[in-house]
Image (cartoon, rainbow, N blue to C red; front, side, top):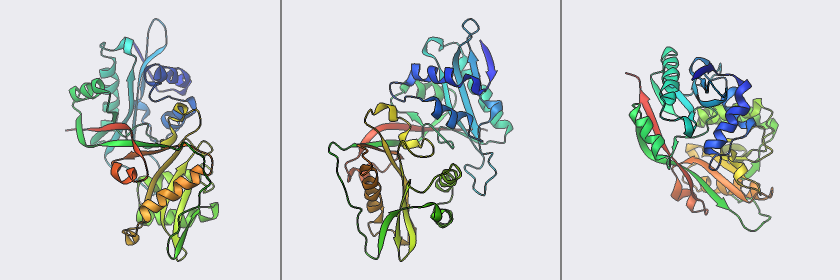
Length: 320
């Protein structure tokens, strides 16, 4: 077996390998793989490797390691590293390839000063953990010293059978609307004040990639933004996490989340209303399937007809 450094020349072949192993549940697109695993500035090149079969010269496994490396006023995961993906073809398992790839990733993360490694949950992640039905994968990582953490994370799904023209909800002393590009500074300031971290980071990248505002519904009270809901579809400026698996839906997929309300204004029903506003915006675009990703709030969203579609077990490992 040959191990070669991470190189986007292999992107299409790695995408084929992914789909061979996972495509029925998590169909990969070359654009998504390039976006999340090659273009992300947080990929640790020294910890990301490809296993090549010496006979066929085809990739049979790979690992992507990340830690925070961007020069922003935001930081995700101080002291944290991530294994974004570790995949070995079924036909080549049991040969120590996975252990070798993981060792290379962990060694590189140690050299970066990482104190704890998480599986998934990286910037431009694919998964918030190990897909819960993959019992063999969970058992393998447990043998490598990884430990399960708290509750399962969920991707939720609702499918709307009938098209509808819907009105945005109403709220006393305020209203819902889509952002415009002119709102960028005010909106980022709101996120920095109320939701610093990942949500602010994702919105910053959204505008850097040319976002116009159409992916955010906000609620304003007395002219001030007090809540938001991200909505995604096929026309968004990059492939967002809740529409990663859109190829599973021939008639189109939209995504809801993240969303949040300023702590000062919680307890007024604005949280559920902002979700409803996001759903209205997507349904009025003709989207019949909507996913809410990476949440434990199954009962909350169940009030709007959403049910658990995919589940993920969170795993981590502290370096001693």
